[in-house]
Length: 280
Length: 281
Image (tube, rainbow over all chains, first blue to last red; front, side, top):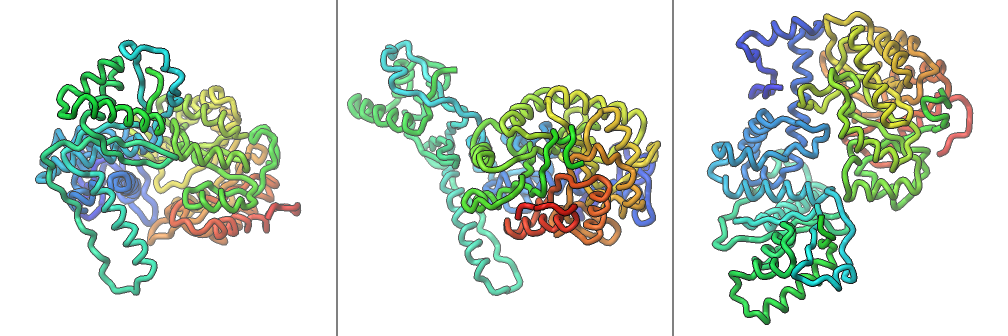
């Protein structure tokens, strides 16, 4: 389905340069009110409005970063190149990060922030309904020596290294939405709708390590220390636990005693979250 | 038909669609509802909130599955991965029958997420019936095929829509989900008599009926499921009931969804047209 015109009508020229109306007349019957082009146009419009609506719903933060006009241009270009290949609209944004990296002209000058935002918003989709395994119990690993102990992580847990505080931006967006909802319920009609503020953030000097996960069926963000992030990545990579701890702390400035204390605390927290599982 | 092999010999009354805005109300207030229809695709996930809510609903209510992406009319055979996920859900819900649409919607691996009208040709009859048989054999539940609203017709069609529907369900030996709102919408868009459609369907294959609202534009009607049911549609419903008898009836309201009570109240209007029998409030 080719994108709509700027006035939201169907393209008047077919892919081979002929008139779309002539192509439509070949297989669609007109009726007494609509010609063949107009009847086909209904489906063309419904397709784009449906997908763009779904896309905007899944990437609200991205829309707030780019603004409506640039977001719409990006969405149309993305959906044209990476249209839906799944029976479910849930996967519509699965290739968006790839597209943004391939075609930075659609997101300039915000490309760096956009990439981080897209990664977090796609991670939300994963965290919301990805599979869940039985959480690991302490007694299941008690007798396994750490040099040979391998662990797994929940499939719904996404680990991200970011340059921008996207979790904070999305929190701000959520609060804006709550304020708008509250004000709409009490507002006297004043004509022009309020313009939403754009989201913006500079890249941080140090990376931000973020876990996007699910707890009690809601999606949460949790910032991680660098060592914790590297440890979880190593665990996910199938590295035995003892070696994973060594790898995670190679660049740490903390003393061994402080790191040991932190690790004990991290593992207790991850077990309470149910993040740890038996290896795949 | 009130009870047939196409609805697993059940006797379901008036139901409504299970929709997110009503979750909290249903789980907290536990209203009396004869049955809920779920959109299969919303629950064909691996875990998370959708399944958690569904499991709570299943503890209290009867649920029937309705799909939007089997695309029986596709030129390709049904997607096996899709069918496996769907069958997992069928086992979870215990749905007595499963419905989806008489349409196509994907080609060469690209999905439109729409219910596209069929060309009513003999070739399409055979392909569609074969796909339905394959899906039914895989899922091992009775299937009902729903007529769609449409906004275009094809020069290549060799028969009317109702003739096409009849040929398909006969060859597939499946049931019909008769959507009287879709019949009304299509009749206005294509200029046929909707009563002729109602009178032509094989009554013994009607497993379920849909009613819904729609939106009128200057030159066509769009099946939007965001309004109360029009009187003209209720009249078609009455004609259908007179032909097929008391049949499981479902009100579809999928956009600009009002409160649960408003939707349920609208659905229960169907009881005015049903043969006299105690109906759950």
